[in-house]
Image 1 (cartoon, rainbow, N blue to C red):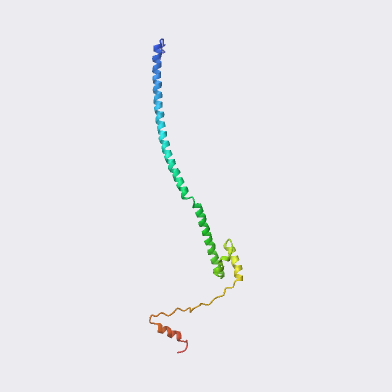
Image 2: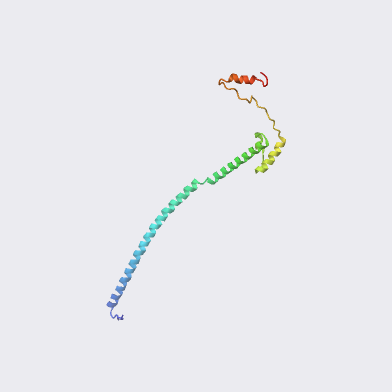
Length: 160
């Protein structure tokens, strides 16, 4: 390639205008690309904002929904513990023959300590066995065998 000497102002302006047009074209293409990227970024920001808003709403709803969950779990666990303790006291009272009225006086944090306490209480409490208030035999039915029942009741073994 040979170097051409520029001798006039017009030649200089012609060369420069050619180069300026190419540079302007490159800048315009780059500006269009940047504008396209900017619009894509704005769309992505809008999508992410929408997603963020919906997730924030979901988080708020879940926080409201489960706000009392820990408190409820704690209450239920304490109820379960109370039922287990009551069950253990009842079991120990039955095993040691204590009246059910005294089962609530049994103290202790675990079954072993409750058993020791109940044994101490049982030393001081004597349970009297009370005979049944009525006849333990069931009443005869009226199905036509009433006479036989009366006969058996009056019959004595070994005598006619």
